[in-house]
Amino acid sequence: MKWTLNPVMRSAQNLIMGLLLVLPTLSAQAQPQPEAQALYQRTHASLCLSCHTHQSLKSPSSDAFMDQLKTFQANPRKDQVMTQMARGLTQEQMLELAQYFSTPKGKRDE
Image (cartoon, rainbow, N blue to C red; front, side):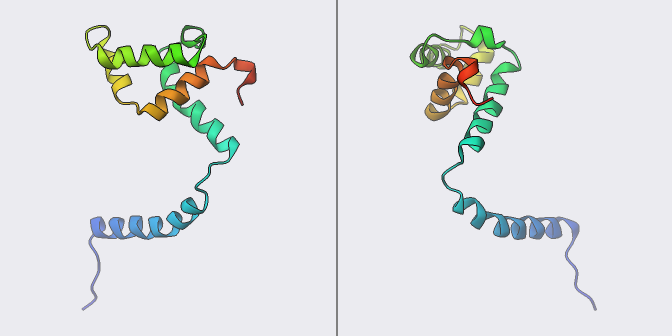
């Protein structure tokens, strides 16, 4: 009698094997390359840009942008959608977005 895994178990086994192959590579690249970091920031910013324009998100300083995000986190009645979006961000993510949108577009790695 030949023993075989059901499709769910086979998928789980393939996922685990794939992770075991990829994880050492990821840990070797603990410090992201500048190009990868810039891509990450643009990808993260694209979530904001799905509703807003670059112009509407342009901020004179990263502190002003951070203040806006913190206001949305603290005040659920101001804008329900933005409150949920802001609450889903970590402090580090908010800082990255603030830096991204307060940097002139020509000086960002785009």
